[in-house]
Length: 95
Image 1: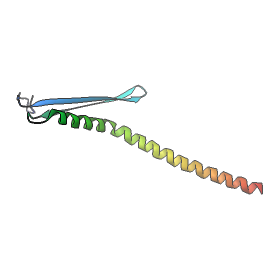
Image 2 (image 1 turned 120 degrees about the vertical axis):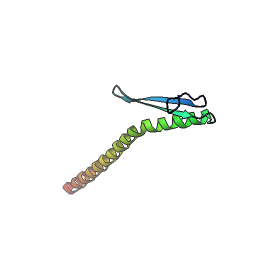
Image 3 (image 1 turned 90 degrees about the vertical axis):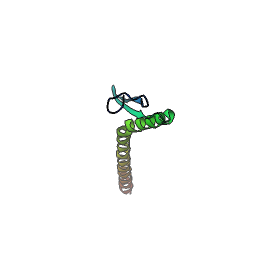
Image 4 (image 1 turned 135 degrees about the horizontal axis):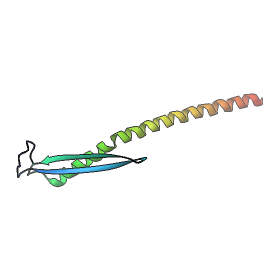
């Protein structure tokens, strides 16, 4: 079907769907379809569509992971500071 719901024999539609397991019995599903004209290379269009879906489905997950890494690094810095302070206090009390 063409975009205006009329059949056009020169147009083709490709669809790619991905389900991403998020853990804890949760998943995320993304499906994108694209109209192709008769002269478009289906291999190139399919690869482009697959890359788009794979990138888009992971965007939120990737941001969440990056935030968790930043928080963990901040916590590590905090803990190192506490270790240094405790070590200095220990050295002072040993004198």
